[in-house]
Length: 339
Image: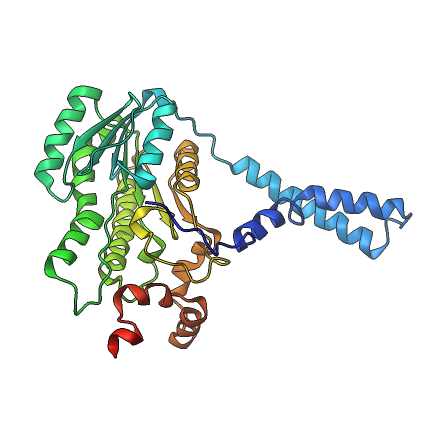
């Protein structure tokens, strides 16, 4: 399916943040400023010179501390066996191919046949909403590749509808894939990771797991449950003093077929993401070898803060940010239809 990028702004908040990080908020900016001031023969006691001296010293301290605390994890992808649910297309397929090209053995669980031709990707037809099918696929994976060292719960489905119009099957299917499958896959693959005292569990959730949207109630609820499942899993691993790492990924609007029908109203604050961008960030998070939460684009970091705002302020943000307007056409009849 071809994705429509019409209206996607060339300048967005993510671009501005990246520019600021590499300019005004980089210590080299202060060094250049001091050199320019001294070229104009301003004394060291001049307020502007002293300001940039202190500013540069502060940024150097921040960058130095950040470098000292930076994770030094190492992942040898040639030793990894990675299970990816929903890896036949979209983000899952992009991630599977990227990991396979790094040398990992990848097992894809999906009801749809995989389109990848890379030899290190094996496809297992599996309805992840069925625990018995997951168990059968897991036995095949262990026999062919060995015990998985990484699990990526990526599969997701969406059935846009109003609560009063959604069918029982739609709601059940949404939760089986987006939430319950996480229980079944973790129960199946985590024990071997605990025994080896190493591994990674990646949960691909969504910004809509933090912010509810009318017309996507089942999807938002299921992704919100997945976020709390992941958080609880991380705390259980802490209780066990395990070295198994967890990565929570909450992306905004991806340019994949699943949300091709959704038009993001404010692409300046929430620019569209490509599967390649998100896959690369997931790989970086895994390679850091620490438990971490990943929010993309930059504005998604404030998703959890949104829930703490007063109702009037949330309504203002939703109205002027176009949150509900982006899905209204999917679930509400147009004025012409009403007539």
